[in-house]
Image (cartoon, rainbow, N blue to C red; front, side, top):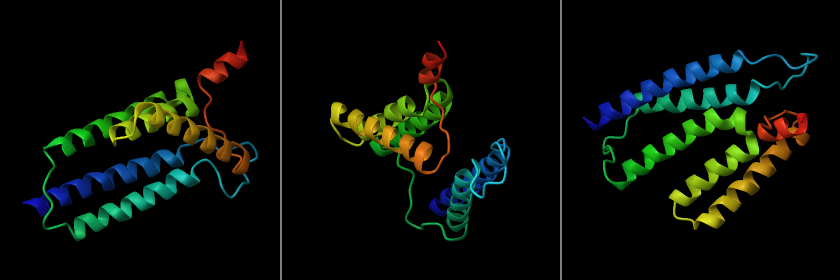
Length: 151
């Protein structure tokens, strides 16, 4: 029965990878459109990795795997909720604030002290934002910061 769990999860993740990859192809072309690396490159790469990993789960499931219905299962549900909220809040709050909240919450749930967890989230958000905006020249949403600049 436990191998069936892996296979079901693997198939669901393949569906997610396909939907995510399709969504990445729907992103608007950057101005000029001749860049080799566009806004869809990283999401497409993630979709391929997710699809291949999920396919492996379907073909070679773990025979000793059991669903974690204990505290671990609750923590997994919390992590999924945090990531869904992160995706929903990314545009309105912006990358830095959303990433600070998501990474901080996940670090805290993994046992870090709250202040250190959210400092880690803030540093991660700022570093990745700067890396994408200046090193990779890929704009990330500013959210509230965009709104404040407009006024």
